[in-house]
Image 1 (cartoon, rainbow, N blue to C red):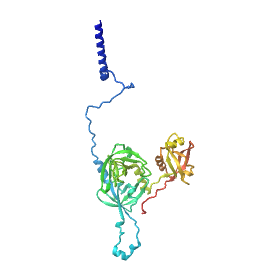
Image 2 (image 1 turned 180 degrees about the vertical axis):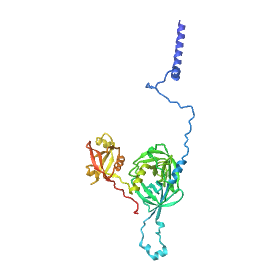
Image 3 (image 1 turned 135 degrees about the horizontal axis):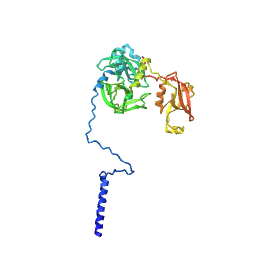
Image 4 (image 1 turned 120 degrees about the vertical axis):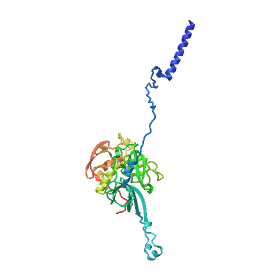
Length: 389
């Protein structure tokens, strides 16, 4: 009997050991689903055994061929106003020494790019490309050159419109930058370093970039397509060859491309262009205040529930805001019932108001909401550095 129990106990021990090994390493053999320490079921996705196919990028040559004829090189020149000594007009001095201050020695040149936006000869470019120019010349894709005149500029978006007296020019089609997504392919076309028309490819890296200090009204498309000096004013086009942006600036510590470029969205550029062509300038709403963002510390100081809105830091004497009774220390939280988060967004809402119209602002004063009626003024135009024409 003792021998029987010894054999039985050994058999049970072996069976339990086998069961432990199977449960630990092959639980599916027993129909058991493994559990995490917290008791939750862990679902693991297994990769398919089929080989992964390469993504076929194809070619963007059709997009390039469609857009390139409408992109021009912009060359500007400026006469350097050097002081002229009266001795230079002495006939005896000029006889022996000539005029060392001749026209050629007093001329400097710079370069940029532009985009033909209409068959009538309108060219869209950056304001900083032509801002200080006395003479402007554009070179077309085929090599032809023609003088250009400034129709109007908008320094606050860094845009300018030129006019070339040529008929039936190839113009670009405007795309919809709102349809762009991060990761979409784009082409940058321009005149880098004066080399002539050049195409580079990249993707949309980000949208809605603000607070870059490039211009007053910022809503940039960021791209890693190579953009260098001379690309300013050139075209950023989508994979269909449609204009989605005007290349404006690069982030660089060396002056060369580091894969961070910024373009003005084409819908904003189109709005500015149409106003310039129609009126010669862009008219924006203005209320005459200086504001600052609400930091968490300010929100705590004013006992505000969020950091949305802007703090009125100062009010211009005699301006629309002062006439409406707005005071420094008020918190502006909505413009025409549209709430906003920060100062740049508020600036966009105010600028979109029609000068002369009445607008309703919602403010907080001593933590109490007030609705203020204000007559919108005209935003003063910034001082331009362009020479008088």
